[in-house]
Length: 217
Image 1 (cartoon, rainbow, N blue to C red):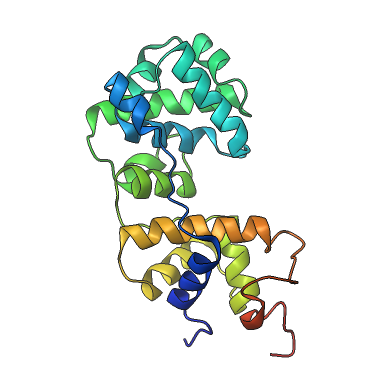
Image 2 (image 1 turned 135 degrees about the horizontal axis):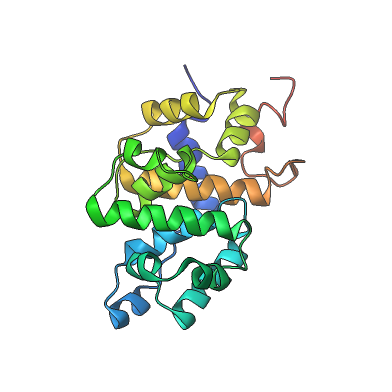
């Protein structure tokens, strides 16, 4: 299938427009000072951000730093009712604490999980599993979320299931962890700025190529 622009062309266009997003955000100074593992912050954040604004997650992560420790070891040992109180600023915090504890137990036994390890845990769906594998364990698996699906449909006219969208992205991109991370973040940024639920096509850097913005194509 010929795409206009190609997926790498779109990647470069978004990168030129927004600059590097450098996701997933991690407080490396904190982890150096506390001798904790930075990937724990990614894993914890990936669970907490489900159906929640990132600004709320940042509050919860900061509370973990101040009231406990930003680590899976702390998650594993901390009583559930205390952990629930700490991460309360995020939605569905009780369910997320249960998921975090199950995840912490799994990762104490399995140093580097695979997709099947993660997806069998209650509260871990395909998107969260891929976020953890890509950003925490640097495995080349493209993260598909509602923003990616929206942009693929509007720009290219591709109405795909998450599973097919993942296969499509991975077939049309170099198998490169750095590109996968940056592209996922850039698509999210573009969806939040221009390709919203009601799109803002005026000024959109991709409008020239977009099927949705140009129905006559």
